Image 1 (cartoon, helix red, strand yellow):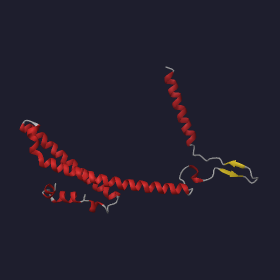
Image 2 (cartoon, helix red, strand yellow):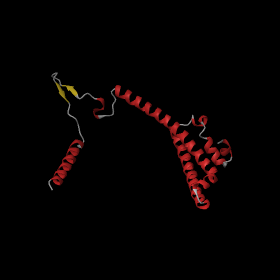
Image 3 (cartoon, helix red, strand yellow):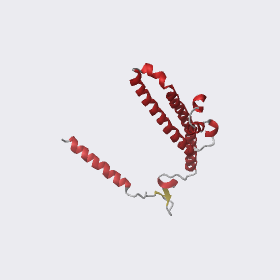
Image 4 (spheres, one colour):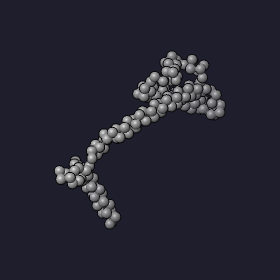
Length: 165
């Protein structure tokens, strides 16, 4: 594999060197996504070239078995990019999982602190009046509940009309 990489053009060598673990470690998630995109694009290009050359070789040599050894360099190049893409994907998965866990912990901490983003914003739906009687506080709506009910009823009417045919 090293011999193949050293025989590639400088641009390709640089791209494959960016996948080395010590170079990927300091990258954040967005930078890794950019690297993943560049590696995937190069992999697709080399796989496409390999397949085209292999198809042409089959026609030229008269069979896949005879043509297979003739296209080794293109196949190895495509495989090198496939391996690089797998390494970047694995590193990206680790960072995405870490970000997901951090976000989950942050949301749980906010929920525990009563700063939820859901309906009511963590407010108490029960209020006490001046006489000491507990009463429920009416919800303010934007009409979404009524609109949803109307849509649901209209759908039920349409379905009933179809069913009666």
